[in-house]
Image 1 (cartoon, rainbow, N blue to C red):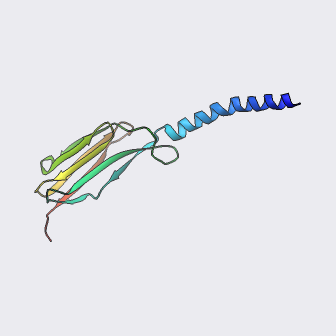
Image 2: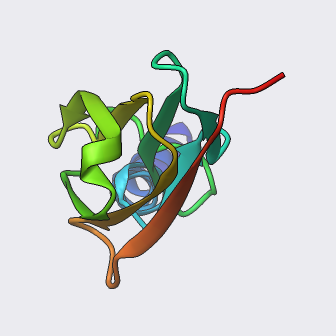
Image 3: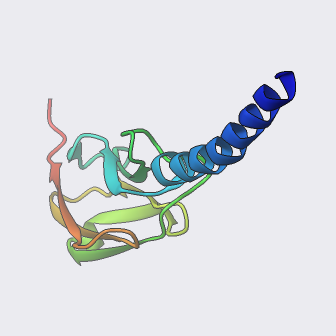
Length: 130
């Protein structure tokens, strides 16, 4: 009788372990969508204000996918002469720009590898008065 329970438990484990591995892979480690973390889109023309875009892969549970990053292409449609690019990490999906002493708007097109369509961000560089 004890041997029958042991075999039943073994069969259940043999079936349960691959099913759990499949579920963990598909819901925890698979990228379902891409989210963007940004700072305020209004910065000042003081030469020190920065704007950051970070592309975050999201899993099926709604959390950041562990151990994975999204390759991203950042293109400047307008206003590249108004900013300095501090960091453009295409492998990890992060962009940091700093304003120069000029006002205007900067349009940034963000195209992650795992996204169907690109996203446009408009950064307003405002005059630096008190």
